[in-house]
Length: 358
Ligand code: COI
Image 1 (tube, rainbow, N blue to C red):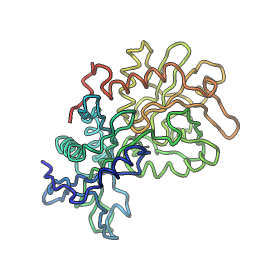
Image 2 (spheres, rainbow, N blue to C red):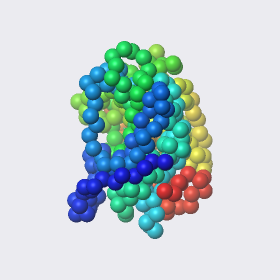
Image 3 (tube, rainbow, N blue to C red):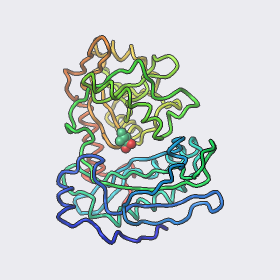
């Protein structure tokens, strides 16, 4: 149970309305947050939802030095009848537990994970946008908060969950994005590394390549495997899918180096239902570039909780820009996106039992 001590000074209705009218992504946060503490002696305790506020961190707090940290991302959607729903939150709980295990952090029981989110969303329900395709983006995270500079798993850990209204992830909305193929940098070391964990370190590793992408007019980076630099893995913050002229929906297999995306998994189901033939396997970079050139690959899209499903307009290398579908989104990308959003916003029947009422 997360005890609620609501923020005594919430934003005014007018202030909130102004934010909800144009939320952007990741810039505004609701009035409260969920917190819990774990210590080696006491296990999880002090579960509460209270005012959103800065942390006071000791300069020797372990996370600031050794990056023992994990996070999740999921969304709450307001349906036409004003009810509020989460999309497959138990998958996020599961992945949070796997990430915790990889980062030698304590596992937060799934019921605590779900209860922290439900309590926070209920307390801050006025922050869940209505209408359009905005939603409340929820960011649970956990970090080593022991004041100790020795390198070992921390004995004091903080769990926190914040939330904020969000529109499209990319500043230009849902437009085809250009992808930079990184040959110099990799995101994940390989099997046994932390590529499958949702931990800040993977995102930190991606940033220099992200910078290179911006310098080359691209919005995201396509990372290859750490060993051979031959196989497609994922984008800096999203999984990647290819669609072929002969009706295949292809995505890199989960081999311990890429993130087990909840949207990725949902697209496998929705793709099958569209009659696409699913292939989860190794994909060589050369196969992708030649496939675009030959016209075999007709669509490419990125997917993730924040980005939902976003078309890829081109893949750019040092030598050449490979333009996909004339730089436009395609029918399967649009169709999958529409179907997924219709389920999430309650406009289509949830035949898979994916939606979770708050
Ligand atoms: C998400 O899609 O929720 C993520 O965590 C990725 C991040 C790029 C926002």
